[in-house]
Length: 156
Image (cartoon, rainbow, N blue to C red; front, side, top):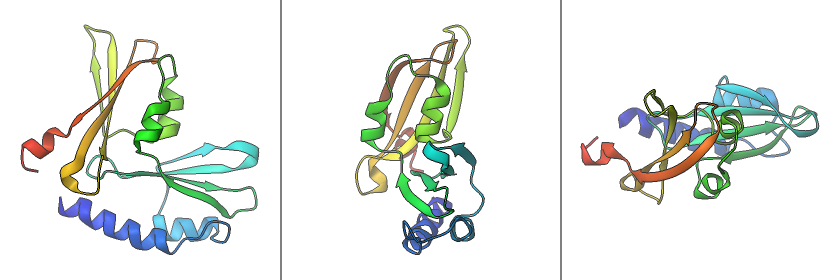
């Protein structure tokens, strides 16, 4: 839990020092480090993924515009984003929307793959939940669900 708290504290400080429209790509890399992934965005933008899984409860997507400036910074593990995940969506599209999951579990007998993300459904760590996306053998969304984080029950 100490590592997760340290990450949150660092993120809050670093994010507060970044300003949409003014901060540069170099500023973002200095404050946030190397991105987990870089995705092509609209109109020549690039989207930097900053993953805080498995210990954290957040994933950030930072859009760098074609002018080299930060256009947006958003925490993507939200109930609003989860509601956008629909049956039939491709795994890559879900990954670009939510970032790297904390855990991937394959169920060969059921021919399913589950992606899990840890997130907060409230202001406290006691509000920790797991959002799961179930994919079929073609890596298309079948269903989604949320549950209380089992680590809470284990006292972690």
